Image: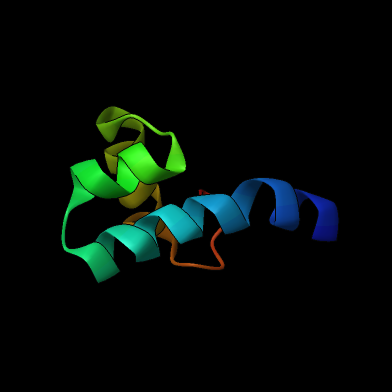
Length: 56
């Protein structure tokens, strides 16, 4: 599961953390190369399953 975690989950968590640090979702998405729609989809999955949850 390390490969999945490194390639998929860590960047998604990184996007959520960057948005929190910057206090600006649009700016975080621009820096990381994601759309705002994708951010909010990841955020919803994270909120449902937590950082270690399989849903993100």
